[in-house]
Amino acid sequence: MQQEWLAERFEEERRHLFGVAYRMLGSTSEAEDAVQDAWLRLSRSDTDEIDNIGGWLTTVVARVSLNMLRSRKTRGELSLDAEPLGSRLPDPTVVLDDGTTQDPAERAMLADSVSIALLVVLDQLSPDERLAFVLHDLFAVPFDEIATMLDRSSDSTRQLASRARRRVRGRSAEGSGPDREVTTQREVVDAFFAAAQDGDLDRLIGALHPDVVLHADLGSGITTYRGAAKVAGNAVMYAHADRVTHSALVNGSAGVAITFHGKLYSVMAFTVVDGRITEIEAYAAPAQVAKLAASLGLESAHGQA
Image (cartoon, rainbow, N blue to C red):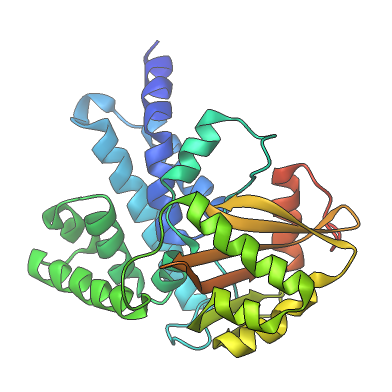
């Protein structure tokens, strides 16, 4: 009975725990591993000594994620330099937005998921900065609790979060924040692809912010294109007759899944600010596309990972 009760309590916290781990790691598989690790630790613990199971689990997931990040940095998988971003883009959560997917839980998770653009910025932070920012700014965990996880003083932890906050704001688009309404985003994204299909560079450039950034992950590192003219010039490749663009929700925002002869070729995420595209993430790495294809019930155009 005790294990059944623990399992029920854990399931109540699972979505929150995944959210913490995903924002820390930017990887769905690693986030799931961190959550599973938390369950194993909980199932082996004396729960009579745990006053707040939700808080205890959050601490465990945060610490596990921090260790994963530190190990990743030690192996050199991600660079702290702004250019290049690193060897990978954060894993997206993708749902085809064509009316065929009606899972309320899945759509609820997408609705409150963090944007890909923010995950890209978070990847530029040190592990300790990322933990301080994610837990305090995104989940309202007190600095005293975060300081204990990091073995630092509260003042030092507060400074970490402040430094991370400045870096996040410094990488954000100038002006107002991203457009939140998916309908508004979709109109802009659809206009972008319609112009690409017609090969109309003027209309393409009109859909883009002058300082738009495109990050393309082809599997051998990230290639970055900057400026409306450069990004528009690369967009005409999506006009191929055998490539079909499907509306999708990518981390809760308007995006697309592109198929080639019915198989998933790539996924694209968009950030839209004041009616223009400011940032694009293009996923075409074979291993990542294969994983996304499996989650969507499709075959991958790149073969299996």
